[in-house]
Image (cartoon, rainbow, N blue to C red; front, top):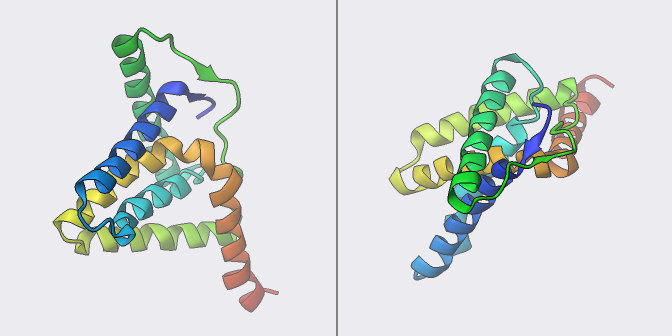
Length: 162
């Protein structure tokens, strides 16, 4: 993916706003732990977007492009706004080999969690996925990719390879 679009950002921020508003206004307890599955899904997919290639990277790039096109269409047809491509590239930075191991572990944990989750947390996990996928290019390079690389460095490289 070479560019990010305003439509992609729109989809991500709309999902985030709707889920947080639903939690805040519909929930009687306002227990923030109920937002954790949504956050986990969003962070997992924002982080997985750092996969530059391979099967995971290809599928997520294809999905992110679809989300971006849907957002662009909604902006153009819904509000009359013109299509805008943001000039900066959508590169996340590069995962180190040890960061890639951490990423695969996170993807496996996410798959196990989603298979074992009950109906409500599963719904929140699944709502977090497109949110993280769409907002990942805006947040991933600054925060998530360096964090995953650091975790790989500290947990894998330093104890076993240095």
